[in-house]
Image (cartoon, rainbow, N blue to C red; front, top):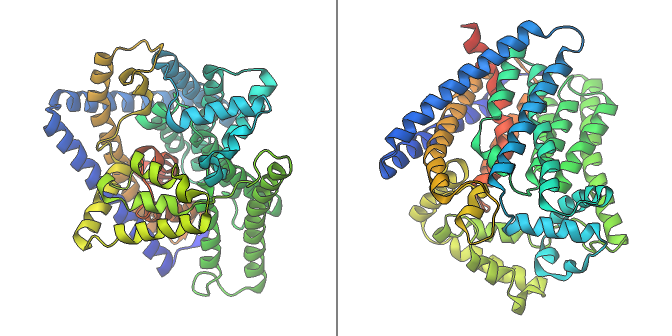
Length: 495
């Protein structure tokens, strides 16, 4: 626990304000899409489905609370949540049978090639620029080699296991700070969010990275500062999460910021011993985070798997794409052709960075009005379904051969319902998280891990005002907000 002071309260005010702003964005998209598509029936159905899910979740929680007891209660509830999560994801993939495409297909092909000892792909511009993307295929190739599986379905099933594990850790982390029913409710509701279900059908690195991050936060989420063994293990888990996908650096930076806040004189009574311990533990977390990532990257370099390790040789790329007004900060083939596939300057790092910096400067000189519009578009693209399609339906809409049991007309019907439902869930989640921010603001002491989540959410939101955005990128923030929202869920239940 950390003392809530003026600075902490300021952070919570920013968090609460941003949550309520996102609430308005979700409401705006819900109304505009309903009016635009004349989806009054589907919006009504979305509300009805949400109410039914809410009732079902409450009934299931009631059964769990009344019939499960004893020292294995937590393990049994965690197992039930895991089975429900895995079953829903496995069934969804079997029905939709999504052919892999774009980065998902690249990850799949590279996973198979690595499992067969082939790393000839590393000379491609993509892997020269974004060596850090190799972490996930490298990890999954161990499963492919171990179990001799080289087809998509088994690998995606393994990925679904990782995704289901994340749901369990939502429950475990929240349970430490709120009543158990609130923690169970947050985990169960996560099962019904369209985005996690959608991503369970594609070979994405987001599930495994999230699992490692939540495992790390769970280890660090008890006493603050945590004991040294937990600090080391937490740092290792965050590092593994970052190797798989570079999201964990945000959470690690948030831990470091929290440590700096905690050693301020107006936060904690001056105590040399306590200050030294906070700095020591935080230093160990950061060192473990950096050391393991560097070590594994160096090993990959020594073994010839990836000479560049897990480095990002082209960090300006994300900023260039994120500043593109014509695409609203989203990926475009034109940017990819110019920045990645253009051998004329790609091979010369100095020229490449110089040209990219000129492009970014040009894109940011469009005037204040357009920059505000760009920021507005990026928020809508990142946090709502505005002009976004679900990745799992790509096979149905494309000319790729698919074994999907759904026709295009059936998928259109699902989309007509899913998007209003998705925005409705977003509206409720942001609103409840904002209420949780108010509840936390009124507290005198705050759980350290909750403040890490608050800081991470603000950092993630700020960073994506500058870099590329896609709807699926906010996936990592759903558990963050659900865990925070349990404080409001607990309060609502009490009243």
